Length: 111
Length: 112
Image (cartoon, chains in turn red, green):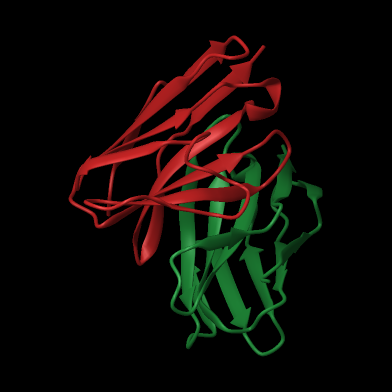
């Protein structure tokens, strides 16, 4: 199993600012994933973060808007840049060890 | 493109009833299917994982079945309790991929 923590757990931000979300895993993993869950919606994969290489983004998501860092095998950050109210979502970090393990999420509200 | 559908979107039943949640997917070339539980404002907790070669998995009062050829899975909850109230999500992983494709979820309420 894997235990995942995220910081912050929630935040309220102003339009045009940026927020960096941290994800820490209690074991070394090759791939970490970032998902978004917009209000009333299901989860959508933003990108896959690989240690030592550029993140791989899904269709509709770009690096300028969601830059990702992966400095080591237990940590990753996702930045939501130049935020707008449409970015208000829960952002979830997850790892796959056959079973998928999710962090508790970061609830973001953009005013 | 894989699409995952969950029916019903919401379900409310009295405590003690047995119930079934449904999940269907359009592309049968899956690696596995997973059922999750999400409590309000929280992350996801994995309930059951079914590999593509398996027909069902059981954990306590939960039983998940998989019919890959017809693109369907069911989550059976026996003797429901108020603590089972949550949103239940199913997700499929395609062969050779790491991405999970999620359904919209079923919001379940168990009334005491």
